[in-house]
Length: 586
Image (spheres, rainbow, N blue to C red):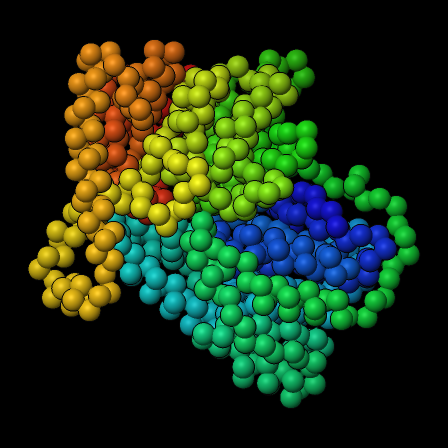
């Protein structure tokens, strides 16, 4: 099986996708389009969606997983138009793209959650769809909207007036928006009430913890469809936070088994299709600038995947002087939290910067190295990966001035890369949660962020009767709390000791202040951007000490109000994007 990135058209939009091709001797004439879930679920389930596509291709199908218009790496933004209709058109365009391979005569749609709802709508109107694989399907658009609104209401931060105005004209959840026309259209869709046609074959993989598709599957079977229904574990693990998400083994096995059991109708051998697909697309910005976005690998072994965005250069125009490498925000892919990296890359490219959004090995769409773990937020080979990206910018795109940017773990890797001596000029660091990571540690281990944050949380719970009941019932890890307070005391004492040692020109281990001073003395600009109250601010204060202020303008710190860790609030995110843009070198 092989995979390759491609761009294809859906009307006036250019869509990005991955074509999964089976081995020549195993190929059948079945083509499967993977229909992703919406928003944060798509971010968390990225690895599972990729695994589902791989499983179908290994079973002989030609598979295309792709990003809808205005999502992922595709063109477009979350405008005020009806996205539901557009996304259904995108699915049909993906089917047309599979037809162009010359290998596909029969079609199936594999949809997860919201994607299963869209798959049902498309299949209801398109007789060429013979198979639907529905994974934890959303049955009712109205109920799904209630679910999204409930999630929105329980958000930890109160919405700003600007965000409230936005929600009145649509819905924004975890930084992902549905326009008012989209909400209105979605509210009218109910899978159980679709009846234009009966899809001949269906695999329904329901949630075992909260099954909701039983009656739908039974009704379709009563109307003559060949339905295989199973309620399987794994949904909650699949859509956990990106760094904790796990591929659901039972669902993966069921999908692979279903595809492999289909009739082995084969297509005659066809010529290679590589020349038929583009690995770049053109974009036009609101100000009329023309951008080129390319899918690339930055290393010779084709392990490290990235997307580059740059201004279209007429012949004879000098190359870009300034480049930016954007590093994974935690375990989120190269699109960034809330698709923030895509928006930044296109904004910066329109200003003349060459931007590369990188997936570290084992994250996003990069391969996992032999013997390494996938989905590892602080992988041991990160410095080598960043170095490969910088070398690619300098060698292939003639970039001279390099900026590293990242959120959370991406900020950590950007800073560590600069401190290690990689040739960079500026680092943009958004909400780092640690400045020192011990290889072999797990995120569940006691980390500095927890040591700094939790004493205040515990103090606030002293008057809580429920908290005392949990403690007396033995449902609180008392030893962990003791260790937190002990380490907090040691961190406070260590901060004072490091300030004194710097005055005496004595370097102590893990002295962030010393490292920042050394970085600034090399001419590297350091910019920190924090959501107010984010624990990284206190970590910088404790571990950087007085050195942060002593560096002066070469180490700038911005604080943004009304934001969570990933800036899922629209107004705060806009402020962050403006500040990041203003801090780019000119």
